[in-house]
Length: 388
Ligand SMILES: NC(=O)c1ccc[n+]([C@@H]2O[C@H](COP(=O)([O-])OP(=O)(O)OC[C@H]3O[C@@H](n4cnc5c(N)ncnc54)[C@H](O)[C@@H]3O)[C@@H](O)[C@H]2O)c1
Ligand SMILES: [Fe+2]
Image (cartoon, rainbow, N blue to C red; front, side):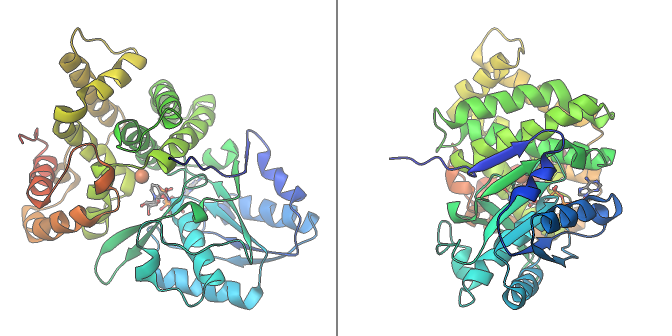
């Protein structure tokens, strides 16, 4: 038996934000990040629409990039005091992920972070509130996923919370929110989406439901990411949809060790999530190919890359990923990003050990232990091919 879960409603396209006017409820808490949603006028629109729906609103602001356990607890307290029946999260992956975790502690004040961090261990939600997610970046697809990534800054570990309970009820995928993304954010989040679709297509839990979503996402990313990076509006619209399709695929097929490596090194090296995925992806393709070359070759064929053999097609897909990094001005290695040898050497043992425990490691097509993670991180540090 397998399961495939998505939000009940996905509103998409221009002006889909206005759908908020039709929500039925009494009180909505709006969770945002720093200042971008306020500055570009989206917060104001959200408040106005919710008030038109007859709701009292409260804004919880200041969720930091890579949200902390402490921020989650503060947000849950604010929810307990206000008593919303809707949680409306708007912004990049960070505020939406934080709002998902706040939701858990709002509904279950007795829950412990370490318990809900265990995969598929979140108690039933929706007794107090339902959840709307409105993404402003085109990458994480958290608006449709069963994930929330929360960082414990004491241990410098990012925990991917995973449970279909936290799949939002409503996703609003309005491309106008993504128009204001600067170039670098467009590049990093776009490569995050490519990593989602690629990992979902080779993951052990992949299915006939997730495969077409992953392939369509990769095709759309190939056609549109570079153009979107250069500010093409239509391409940006397409990227907002493509990342969402990738999210539908990986929320159900789950991910692999590109993400395990990113989760365990992100908080240590202070490198944005999408940038790390972009650096790790070519290394992981070479590592995984001994067990799933046909799957990568399949992707290559579906997006029109050439190659006469399976091996040539896998090479072509790996080179396509590297080529995207080049076109988007993403560093090719951790060293090129600016991580010093000292910093790398001080952390390699710890991040390799932690990566084994990451929730995404078990879904990777090739089994991976500490020794292998060390080799993978080292190859990614130097920008070399992995030879194990
Ligand atoms: N839940 C999931 O399924 C999932 C999947 C992948 C990644 N993640 C997590 O999501 C987080 C990354 O999210 P992200 O990449 O969306 O970035 P983010 O939410 O951390 O935002 C990065 C920066 O971009 C700004 N920003 C956001 N939207 C903008 C816009 N439209 N215009 C201008 N500036 C804007 C923010 O203010 C912030 O400063 C990481 O913590 C990552 O681990 C979650
Ligand atoms: Fe991701």
